[in-house]
Image (cartoon, rainbow, N blue to C red; front, side, top):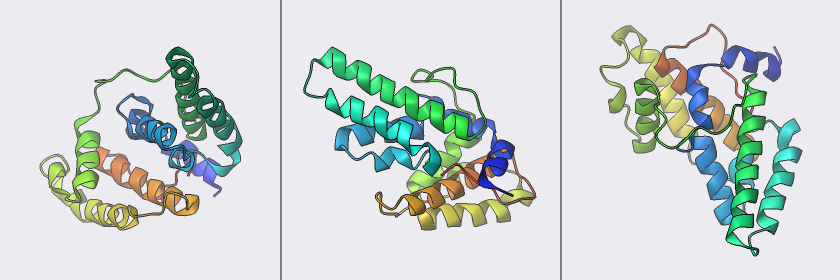
Length: 183
């Protein structure tokens, strides 16, 4: 099965938090703008979709010596392009970046917290015991892949595949096939 076909099967609410101001994709987009390294954001899109994101990034960076208003508009355009392209790669619609504080399902928030802390404990009591062995396996894989070199997009995309597999499983969305991500 091709990645694009797998992606269509992956569309789940866990991926939806990527389109919030507080979500991981927007956060990475902002870090890319701050550091001038587009690779931080490119891991969120399929290689075939990189060009559009790179172009928006270059437009945004080109405005950083201009007025704050111009910079803000260009930065917002870049973030919108990044998230729209990311969501399209998942087969999901893009209706705009959702505001800070948009509710995230508790299991998704706990899964993100677990990966951030390196401890699976935030998910205790949220995921049924019979799912725990698989959850730990997916958690261990995602944690093992976290230390990727930001300029190694293949490794970054491999981590995001593991991230999505872990978060969607924690949320209760699992499949018989191996999870894939547009990254």
